[in-house]
Length: 126
Ligand SMILES: [Mg+2]
Image (cartoon, rainbow, N blue to C red; front, side, top):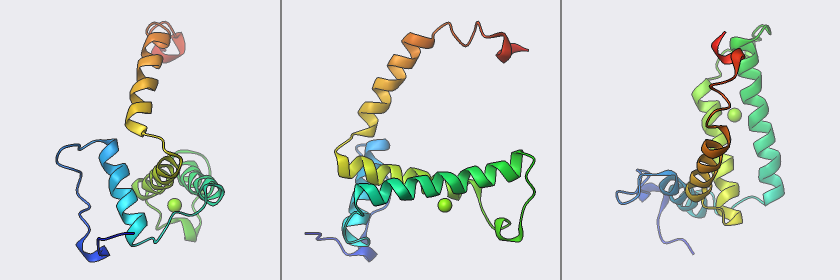
C-alpha cells in the first residue's frame, strides 16, 4: 500500500537515476497515490490510442492542411506528447517493461541495422 501522500510526492527525477527509469518510478508513485491504481491494460491501450489521436489531430492542423476548429485552439503540442508518454509509461509499469533497457536495446539494433541506410537514402539529401 502507498505510504506517500500526494502532497508530499517527489516528482523530480531520481538523483541516482535521472533517466527514463526515473520517470517510470515517478509515474508509478503517482499512480499508487494520487491515481489509486492503474487502469487495466486494455483501458490504457484505449487511452493510448485516444491520446495518439489527439496528438495526430493537433499535428494535422499545425503542420498539415486541416484547419483549426475553435475546440482545437487551446491544445498544446508538448502537452499532447506528454499525454502519450504518460499512458505508455503506465503500460510499461503495469506490464513489467523497463523502458530504459528496451530503449537501449532498440537503439543498438537500429544503429546496427541502419548504420548506412539513411545516409544512402537520396530522399533524405534531396
Ligand atoms: Mg491528450
